[in-house]
Image: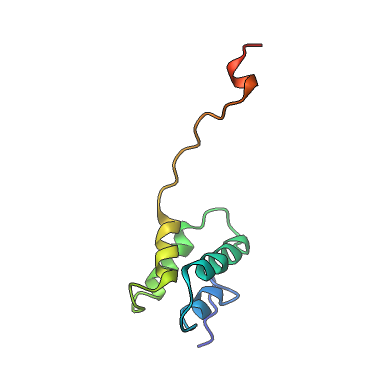
Length: 89
C-alpha cells in the first residue's frame, strides 16, 4: 500500500505517520499542503476518513492532534472594527 487514497491523493498524511520524530509544526505544514490540494471546500469528511484510516496510530502522534484540530468547530467571525465601523455614514 502506498498510502494514496481519494482523500489523500498525494499520500501526504499517510507519509507523515511514517516519519519518525515528526513535530507538531511539521504536521501542521503537511496538513495545510493537504488541505490546499483538496478538490472540495468541505474538508471534514476527508479529515474523518483520515482519522479512521489512521486510528491504530499512537494517539499522541502530532498528526492525529492536527487532524482533530481540523475537525474542531471554528468560532464565528466577530465584528471587525476600524474607523468605518465606529463612525456612521
